[in-house]
Image 1 (cartoon, helix red, strand yellow):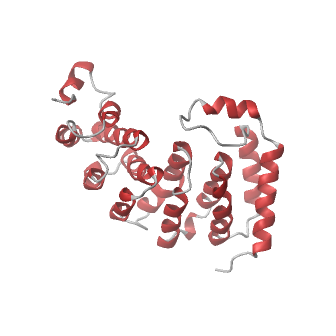
Image 2 (spheres, one colour):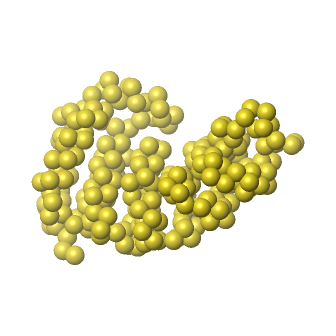
Image 3 (cartoon, one colour):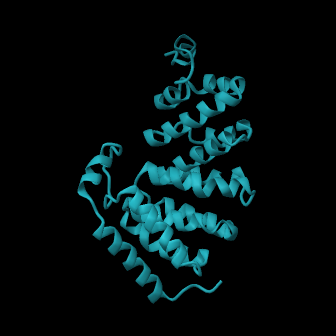
Length: 243
């Protein structure tokens, strides 16, 4: 595919950044900051304002290919700002018919520049889950991600699988891959694993409980906390550490 000129990509990048700067609201930054323990880096754009402008850009830039949006997104994500990353993800989600293994690998590179759990989870919901649904990639393609230096890349594995289980897929097929990160020390990864296992437990309680019993004495506490939070209070006690 022909990629738009660097000059045009730069023009669109400047247009996006100018819109965000003009519509920035420090009160929204303050409001969102409490949800991000590592700090919220963003302009503070009202959600409705963001969505309306997003849709306008979608219409105006209809001729853009996924390669154009990848090139634009490469520049946007460098700021680490919430809205820059959000719009980059939104653009890619618009071009699902052009997804390929190369695009999947590109998403892995993007995740390495992400700065928060919210952008990561939206990427999983809007983009990565589609790769699995349409069998563009296999679950095993996520194995390499489990050893990434980026905790957001590692978090994307259980969050994507959570989306799949929620949509009706058999959770058992993901357990071997999830095992690779069961000893992850990052809370943001542990919470995602626990959420995946909680959803798995709703669908397949027996195999999920067997998995939890296997790992309860060695895995991070947040995994067990999140995985068992929908269980009866007394029943939950069987998954406490034994030492």
